[in-house]
Structure formats: C-alpha cells, structure tokens
Amino acid sequence: MKHYILFVLSACYILSACSSSEYIPHEGDLLFQVSETSPMSEAITESTAQHDSIKYDHVAIFTLHDGMPSVIEASTTHGVRRTSWADFVTSSPLVDGRPGVVVMRVHENPKLIQQAVSRAETHLGEPYDWSYLPDNGKTYCSELIYESYVDAEGKPLFRAKPMNFRNAKGEIPLFWAELFQKLGEPIPEGVLGTNPNEMSKDSILIEAYSYF
Image 1 (spheres, one colour):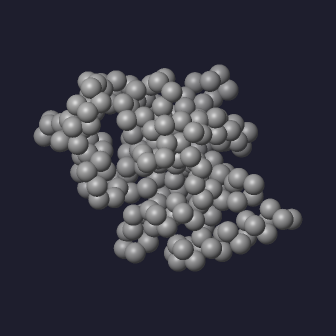
Image 2: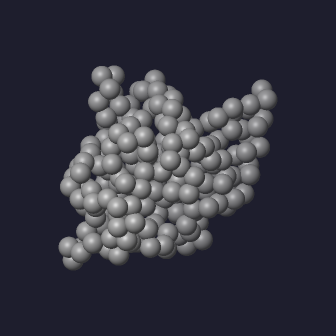
C-alpha cells in the first residue's frame, strides 16, 4: 500500500512536470530523447540520423524502484545511474514546449523484460564509455540497452552494426576528432556498436507513446 501511494504521488508530480499527458511508461519501456543542442549531440545526430527524421541522441530504461518511477541510463556526466522519472522528464529537451521523449516497447514476454531491467541494474556505477568499444567495463547509452535485452539463450535482441562517425559529407565532425585525439585512441569507425537512432527503428520495438 505504501509503495502504491508513493507511486501515485510521484506520478502526480510527473504529470504536473510534463503537463502533456497522463501516460506513465511500463516496466522496461525504452525512453528515446530527442537531440539537444550541444557539440556532442550534433556530432551523434550528424553521424547517425537520416535527413528530416526525428533525431535521438539518448535512450534509457523505465522501471519502478521501491515503488517509485525511475530511469536507468548511461549518462555522459554520471555514468550508469538511476535517475528519478520526474528528473528525466523535466531535463529532457523540449519540442513545442513538451518533453522530447518517445516511449517504445519491446515485443517480448514480461519475464524477459524484468530480466532486462535486472541486467541493466548490474551495470549501475560503471563509467560512461567515451571510447565506444565493447566489453571494456564502460557503457554508453544504447550499449546499456543492447547488453540488457537478450533472449533466453543470451543473444542480444537488438542488432549491432558497424559504427559510423562521419557526417553526410563523409567528414569526421570536429567533436569526434578532438575527443579521440584527447583519448589517444583511434576513432572506432566500423567497430560493431549501436546508437539511439538506429535502435529506435528496430523491428522489435513499437511506439507506445510520444510526449510531444
């Protein structure tokens, strides 16, 4: 009963913050955030988004934690962490005054979804993966989803593809060039990986709700 009351109170706060809908995501739903204005976001969307499409530069997982709506995400500033749903929504870029968040749902059974959430929780505390490489003890946002959503045999539900860091002109944006120069690492062009834009188009997802 206590958890239910906390959930309702939190939901009311969120609805006030969103001022756009009564919709609350389901356990394990994926939350795609539209691109904000920053050098990193522009570099991501230049390399991964199609012209005239909605551009996403972040994805996270919705869950209930101790009865409270929350989000598990790989944040560039904090690494893999748990964030309150209200904070996630209110910090999202705005589209026509509404949160730029689209909720998508995986076509799978509830047990698999709960296992995905539990698997995501094992990554809590890991640093953000600025190298965008697999299996290095660090995690970027769509990599968290890729690693968490697997089938009964442990095979990822989402497809990894050779990564592209070039824009439509075939050039490496300055952000990427400076980042990997600072890291002292080669740009992982062609290494298998994921990104929010490609992931949002995967056939295993359906759009459950858009806040804008």
